[in-house]
Length: 391
Image (tube, rainbow, N blue to C red):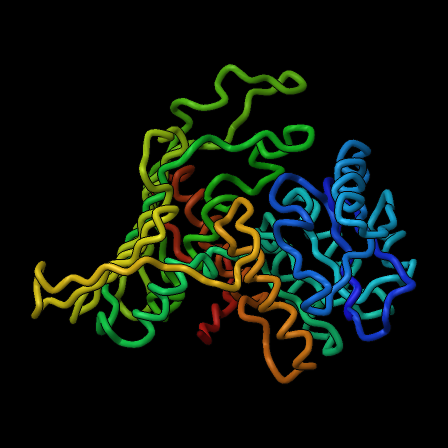
C-alpha cells in the first residue's frame, strides 16, 4: 500500500507510519475547498492509505481530522509541508493549497532527498517563470513522478468526447468551443482567490482546465491568444485589507493553434440560471461532437448523416464511488495517478508538467491580452520555450 500525504491551505502536508510496506501512503496538503480525502482519494481497496495532512490553517486541520476520524483513518497533522517531508512518513504527496503556494511547495518536494511522487492541484503555478523552474527541477529527478490536477479530462462526458474525437469520428478538428456559465468563485481560506496576485488571474485559476482540453482536442500547440474580459458583476462590494477584488468574472478568449485549428472560450461567472455548467463543442471536417456537464450527455454526428443522424449518449463511469464537486473526475484522476506510480517509470502521468505549463501559459497570455488590448503570442509568455505537444 502507498502512504499518501496531503498539503493544505497555505503551505503544508502530512503522513502516518505503521502501514503495510506495500501500501502507498499519501499526505494531503492544503485543504482549500477543492477536494477532500473522501472526495478524491482511492481507498485501501486500491492499496492506498491516507496517513497525514499538513496545513498551517487550524480550522482546516480540524476539518480534515474530523473527516478522517469519521472513517477511522489514523492520520497525523503537520503545520507545514517541510515538517511533513522531513517526517519520512509518506511516499506520495497531494498538493491542494492556494495557487500562489504551489511553486515553493513543489520546489521543496522535488529538491528533498527522499523522493515523493506528487499530484499538484491546478494551476501548476501562477506564473510561467515558476512553472518553468518546476519543470526544469523535476527533469533532474527521475525517481519521482509529478502529475498536474487538470481533472476535467476525467469527467465522464468529457472523457467520452475525447474518445470520440481521438477515434477520428469528427475528422480533422477545426474548431473547439467551450462555454462555462456558472456561479461566482467560492470563498476560500483568507479569501486568497479574490486577487490576481494570488490566483494568477481568473483565466489561469479557472480556465487552465479548458485551455488544456482545447489543446488536447486540437492535437496542437497554441500560437497566439486574444481575449476580452472584465469585472462586471461579482465581488464589487467586497473589501479585504482595504482592497477590492480584481479578478474578472466574464471573458471571451480565442486561441489559434499551430495546425490551423482554433479554440474559443465563453466564460461567465454570474450565470447560475444555466442547465449545464460546461458545454463543449468540437467540430471537424467530417462531423461534430458535444459534451454537456452536469447533464452528462454526449452528442455526435456527421455532416453526411445530418441532424437526423445525431446520436445521443448518457456518459457514466462505474468506477466512480463518490462524485464530489467535480462529477467523480478527482477520484478517477487519483486512480490514474496510482496506476502511473505503480508502473515504476514505465508509464508517464496522463497530465504531465508540460501540460500544466502550457495551460498556464495560455491563461497568462489571455490575461495579458485583456490588459494590452491585442493578440499575445505564446512565444511572448514562454520566452522561446517549446510547447512540445505529445498527446
